[in-house]
Image (cartoon, rainbow over all chains, first blue to last red; front, side, top):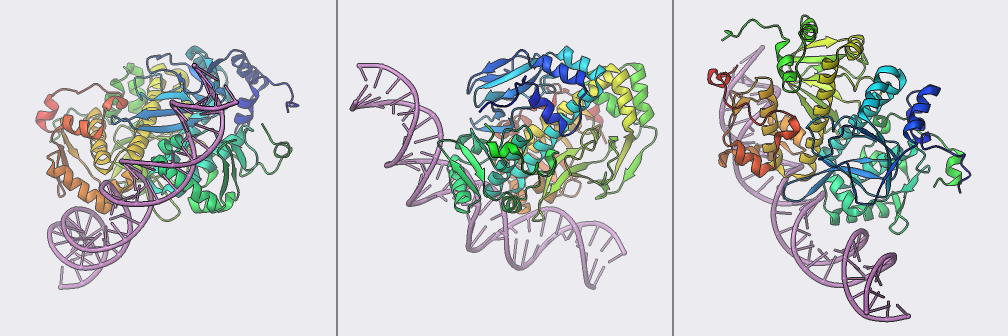
Length: 259
Length: 259
DNA sequence: CGGGTCGTTGAGCCGGGTCAAGCTGGGTGG
DNA sequence: CCACCCAGCTTGACCCGGCTCAACGACCCG
């Protein structure tokens, strides 16, 4: 299962950026440096408390996390998902703005980058700095699409649209097959993401299953999207906002069945 | 009416940033340089077409604009409002990401900053560069709050919350009184922002009026929020995400009745 | 005076929420 | 090894916030 070449954790980030930019040898080494040390968090543990205004950045090596806010009446709105390869905390914690929280959904490992290091990188390494800017812009685009999803789509479209986005984001870092991936989300998490009730998420998932759009095994948590084109059509999904190539086409990757 | 000291257009930006950071004389001059030339757009005109991937930034000097996306079935979702003092286009148009559009709601004047200039500023002027980062983070916080609004609030809360946000954003650039401002939005624009129908926006506005939360004269388009504390309470509004002082308290400004 | 845009209001419907109950499977302690 | 618990998933019944359709009014502009 692990006949993959011995890898430092840096690969995932290099792979991700490579979809947009090629980093120099030296820049790749800088990333590797960061990945030497890491911190881990348990399921449901808070990463970055509000209090900790450390203004450092984090590279997410493995696991899923969410950024969320709570409203006065106790409700929770999930703002975004943090997936392997994502960077976070490098802009929001700098100021007194946005008091949102980050929580691990699964066991998570991250690498910390102190603020000084970020400044140094921006000054001296053009490509890396550009990669950071790209990551920011991409996050911005994802938030934008989330707003459209919440404002102008019904439950069925929201769910399908989100599942497609997650597939394509995971594919970029080789964490998904051609049409399936491990989806560690409870229906409650989906509900709090999509602005729906748990009950209605349940019913909408069933409808997606009945329509042969997806397969989802609640035990293994493996999700398979049966007809991406059809689902994209009915949900109004257009992956161009993720800034990746149309489709990595097939690859040996998929045949092996990536872990 | 114009007994205000002769001003270059730069004041508005300096005022805005001053809430977070103090710019040096030289840095203020750089801003003034940009404000010497400007472009204007008519109501409903598109600013920045998709096609124009110029990757330059724009300072919004006066007027209101929106960033929006359309969904396949013809619906429109407004992502954000661009108000005087806002900067836009300095991150999104750099890449192939986010195919959203920007449109003027009122006559608008903007100043263009070529991409090279931005790069130069980031390299040489610490405070200005920090101000840019702050503006980005603030925009991020505003988007985040918009997501919460759409996902976890009802019509009444959404509307009230938005009206409060606009008040406080305008106050930062002296475009609002202590509790009132010029609101150049049709009910259709409000609907497309809040994910509601026009009809329901109309009814919800009436409810806000009946509850003595607001006064809104459809002719003059002057909006007054009668009890900010009460409205903040019922809508779950907390202005801290805008990163400004709690309340500018009273000022001569208000007595005069700012235009 | 005619047409267009925007605001207002009523009637009826429906997508999605709420409440409530039951089901399932894994974990834990006696 | 069983009894229990608890988190998450399902399903039904009912309700309501917000949508649609439709008509009308108010104002502006040519």
